[in-house]
Length: 400
Image 1 (cartoon, rainbow, N blue to C red):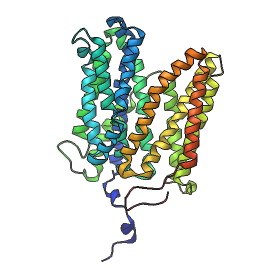
Image 2: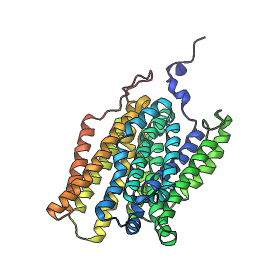
Image 3: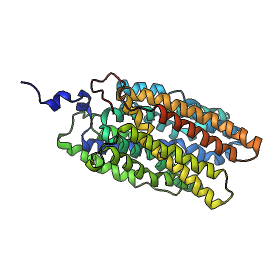
Image 4: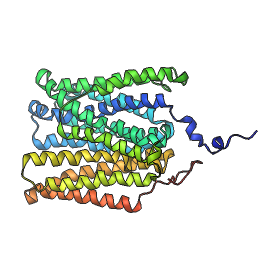
């Protein structure tokens, strides 16, 4: 008996994708995980001034500690993507989160192991960077294999919003903890919450822990969703640039989903056209506001231009970040690792180059001009050469 035509054309990879309740549960939980990743990442910047006073660091030494995170972060992007593609992104995420959560919680103890405070803190930040470097490549690998193509933009962008949440939480709550209990409490809280999150994910979500069976009718997954989402969305704070990113996030992903999702009145837009439009917003329009920021002396205008420039970059989540999953879902982790390594290296070089430009010119204008120029160059390259045709060896290859 011949199978129905629809089943014959079906990509075998679709059988392993999450059901709608599972996708919702994982989206809420990974949003919280990304938030905690950034809580741990920005704990050191929040505490640097207080730690410098306690340990007698000068600005150069404090800068070494802060920049050392990216020394490790650059090295494990490709490794994280490869492991995610081979053994499963969720396993890589949980193992790395367990390690960086433990190191973050133990940071106050490491700082007092001996008199070489700078050495211990630099080493711990490098190790934290190494461990966190695998997160986003593994996340990309996981979502590319488990989420339907029409839902990838929304899912990836929602999970990516955790970076803004984490910055908000640590900036707001961390400042209070510094005043009340000292800098050690910031590390205890962010590290401890990460370890609790790992325990929750391991015990509650399907496919992990002691119960790997797929829940019937999505009941167990729906219960996990009801637990995960309130925890993820109850977080708040008041930093302005991160808040602008959150405000612009959902218009970005809604536009992407409307243009290529399950809306008959808007169907007909090719995936690559949607991705390029998102990048025009995320890089093109953002660079315009960066240029404006470098040519104003008004405080209110500066705040508006900075918030708009940073906020518009959330459109990138629905552009090139998801485009990697369009190209090769089976090896999206490695591809994202390569791309993110380049981004991390640019960040390391940009810090030094920015300082040089400021010292040479005595103005921030040249820095913002450089940001706009690099963004425009990247946008032009993507508009000229960007594609969304699958290039991996999956039997479900199709021209998008």
